[in-house]
Image (cartoon, rainbow, N blue to C red; front, side, top):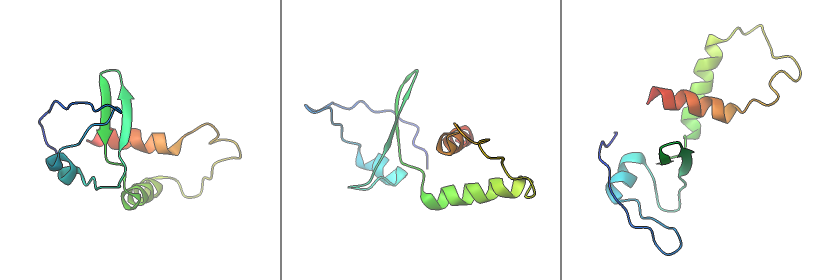
Length: 94
């Protein structure tokens, strides 16, 4: 569920904000859980982290598309952040 509203929040003395219950419930953010804070040119994005099950599913789907006989050469993947690659792919699907 995507909520298409914006809300103004007060920042507490330690830089804390309270995410309203309706947003926490809609995005599966639980007490003691984690959120991801992403800086962008337009401001900050607060989102729920990608669930491990969803990431595994996405990796398996991508793996099916790949040529199973071709394996990366040593050092070929150096400097590539797989987490960043998948986050970019997920953001483009939203």
